[in-house]
Length: 267
Ligand code: CA
Image (cartoon, rainbow, N blue to C red; front, side, top):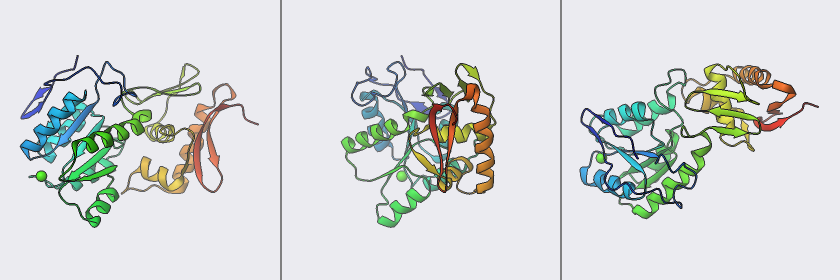
């Protein structure tokens, strides 16, 4: 069943956790319901969300402040966070910015955590700001639970490739986001943290070409943007390290950026 959590004033609502419905959670292993963190200071809204998410097979985690939310992000590694902006101790956007600029080197927070902003601030400017700070989706209050649930399922589906829940496989390449280990053809490949972060970013959509700007933002963060040269040197080192048995996984798409390849002998 679900693991329990107890600590401080934070609590996890596990009431009514049902078997995982196949529709909403098709991409997740049925044995571990995805943890959804709710950062919301308005108690009735938080309870409403927790009860409904639990009934839909998720494992909700509740936080009534930005501080509590940050602590649960670090301790519980949720699959997704629903983030209110008007919080008693700190603006939700500040927490979001901290999350997105949190270097992978520090390892405490998952800077790729999918975040759905759920806020009463509903103007176009508010929504744009939310996306600029790194929100993945934005839903204005008052909201429909059905729509929220649909958006959560869509976000989790998109992030499942790089989810901490499971290993990612691309051809004979395999990576484990939790242990940060990588194997090619069963052989473990030691990578630096940035090399791993770059590979994980590419593996999020193995058939897609990522632009240099996207990769710099994803791997080096919004604030401390690395340079193109930094990216290129990491990419070529990563490519060399993964070149086991003449397989090529990292492709330089000239003038655009990089993509992952299913493993192919070099020409
Ligand atoms: Ca609020």
